Every structure is written in C-alpha cells, then in structure tokens.
Length: 283
Ligand code: ATP
Ligand code: ZN
Image (cartoon, rainbow, N blue to C red; front, top):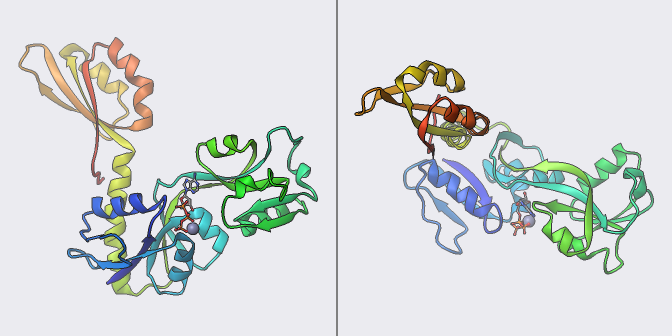
C-alpha cells in the first residue's frame, strides 16, 4: 500500500483528484474526508493542507505527495522529486507599488519586503548581495504596501490581476513553479513497485496532454508532400476515402508543432482538418 498526500482543498485539489482518477484509480472523495483507500489500486489518499505535505512525506507519514514546487522549496525538507505534473503553474514574484522607482534588485537594499516565502526570498536576496527586512506574513501579502507594512512584496502570481488590483507592478520573477510529485527517500521495494506503476500511468496522461491527434483529407497526389510536412511520431496512417483520388491521413503531433504548419497543409491541398485531444499515450 502506497500512501499519497494531496491538498484537501484549494488550487491543487481538483487537478490532483483529476490526475488520480484519469490514471484509473478509483476512490470516493466524499466532502470532509481526511483519508480514503482506493478500491482498485493499492493506494491510500490523505487530504492535507499543502504546506504540511513536504513534512509528511519527508517524515514518512505519507510515501508520496502532490504539492507546488514553491512549497517544496520553501519548506526545504528532504524529499525526492519524481515528476513535474504540468498543473498549478504560477510564479513567485517581487512586486512594488506601481509608481515606485525600481532600477533592478539593488533598489531593494534596506527595504521592507512582505512575503510568505521568507526562505526562498532570503536565498534570492543573499545571492544578489541585498540586505532587506523580511516580514513573514501568511496571507493577503499584496495589501502590505498600501497599509504601510512594506515597500515591496514577494508573492505567487498567475495572471497578475491581483497585483494590478492592488496597485502593484511585478519587477522580478524569482521562481517558476508547478505541481510536483514528490516521494520520501528510501521507499521499500514494494512501495517503489507501486510508485512505478503510478508514474507509468501519469506519464501516459502527461504525454497525451502535450500531443494532438490530427486527421485530414488529402488528394492522393499530395500524400508524399503533406507527409513530409508533418513532424509526427511515425509515418502517418493513410486510408482511402470513398471518393476516388482522395485519402484520409491520420497522425499524432506535438501541440506546439501543429499551428506553425497549418497554413502549409492547407496550401498543399489538405481539407477537413480535424484536431482532437488524446486521452492517454504510451510510446
Ligand atoms: P491550504 O489551505 O492547503 O494551505 P493555500 O491557500 O495555502 O491552501 P492555494 O491558494 O490553494 O494554497 O494554492 C495552492 C498552490 O497552488 C500554491 O502553493 C501554488 O503552488 C499553486 N498556485 C497556482 N496558481 C497560484 C496563484 N495564482 N496563487 C497562489 N497559488 C497558486
Ligand atoms: Zn497553504
């Protein structure tokens, strides 16, 4: 049995549950439950505050956990990173009041900075030879400058709208974070085997998210040319259409490779181009 810690509620909760369910792990997550066992896979799930997950994992109370890299680095507990999970993306930024003068990190010298990330920020300032006074506050960091508590803040940002609303402007990014799958060092062979089965499934889901399945109708005399334009995993599948002289071409491409070639595909005579998402992908 592998014990996995995930966020009880908050920004990582739904994606963590979704990842486990998409990986075929069945469990009931009735509201307010603190732990639950899967009925079809040897895992037990603990629902915890995200801040506590690195400690539970490093102490071996949980074997693995899903938590933001920002929390893992801030808590600096001994845990192994198994996989980056591609959700919960945000950045840890320094922001100053929008009209404040700022000419680079040295502008922070002897300033007061409010943050919930004193450890990461302290390391960043030390690396840049800056001495500043850190105010460690646990929430609503963005109001600190307007109430006179600090000259700058260091906080998580995703779209930046909260900063804007509070009259702040982002001046430094000190970390780009996403959810990580972390594990306790030195898991038993039995637990490692379960973790490997789990990461195999997660990898299939993550790879699928980064790819698209594309289908298009192509004139037969353009098959070779169009196939050459496609950066697919392998050579495409070609199937004859009922209409003479035409074929249906299917392939898989990385999502970021698709848009740049669409115009060329159309110019080469491809029609009825369909792009669909892939649920799971195993190479
Ligand atoms: P908990 O009650 O579990 O302590 P919390 O309020 O500390 O929750 P959330 O706001 O739910 O935490 O954020 C959880 C994680 O989601 C963050 O640590 C971070 O990794 C990620 N995240 C993604 N985008 C953002 C964002 N815009 N602001 C804050 N966190 C974000
Ligand atoms: Zn938290």
